[in-house]
Picture (tube, rainbow, N blue to C red):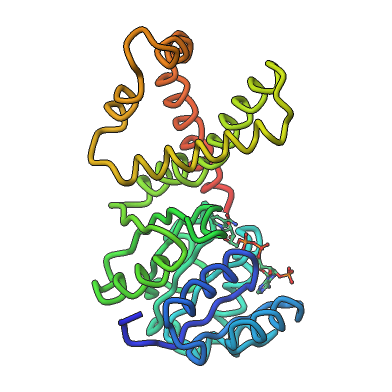
Length: 275
Ligand SMILES: NC(=O)c1ccc[n+]([C@@H]2O[C@H](COP(=O)([O-])OP(=O)(O)OC[C@H]3O[C@@H](n4cnc5c(N)ncnc54)[C@H](OP(=O)(O)O)[C@@H]3O)[C@@H](O)[C@H]2O)c1
């Protein structure tokens, strides 16, 4: 990582923190500049042993040492965690605050932490846990380009990053990329069931479905063709794939996807009001 290594503190040492910190350290971020806090000691011991980062069971202790604070607790704990940080951490307004919690809007963090904070919201998705994430990012207008580049590099360690214009767009990104792995798993499971229905055993069906999904994703990434054109390229006129695709189109797959994404956006907006 080329950016100057600031002290960065992660509040919460769960799955996402472990993956992000693992990615940062693997990309060359100095472990000595990384601080992690968590109430129970097990995850801290694991991170200290495997990654040589600094750990503590005291959120305020790590936050006070940091230039950048990453809030990585479950959304329902955020209000309490922020209230304690506001009470016990000096000069919060001089630190860059980053949150990975789903749903909670920047305006709410101002209420929790003070009107003068500068903040980036990141929406990672579950494949970040295997280094293939798609993280959406949005910043308030107090965040500098240097801050943005710094956080982009941190999240590039667990996959790809995409800056969006505002929090409404982040809700849409959440409905596509955040929820997307579930849509793909649903589709993969249905293909697996189709193969099993015709006599395949489940393990073999799964092996061929998952490898096909991986191959299709890698082809899509490598190709400059539009996705629709890639689909046409592997669909010979009158062939078996064309017959299969006709079935999907009969159910209007575009409408199914549009309905799914719109329903998920609506739910993201409803959930934002809960916090
Ligand atoms: N996982 C994903 O795919 C994903 C995707 C997008 C966004 N996110 C967001 O990322 C955040 C973390 O998710 P996760 O999957 O990493 O969850 P997780 O594995 O449950 O991690 C949360 C961690 O927070 C710790 N914690 C609980 N109370 C705390 C406190 N008062 N102070 C400090 N730490 C505390 C928990 O510790 P104990 O276990 O010891 O109680 C746990 O280690 C959530 O807000 C989630 O919405 C996750």
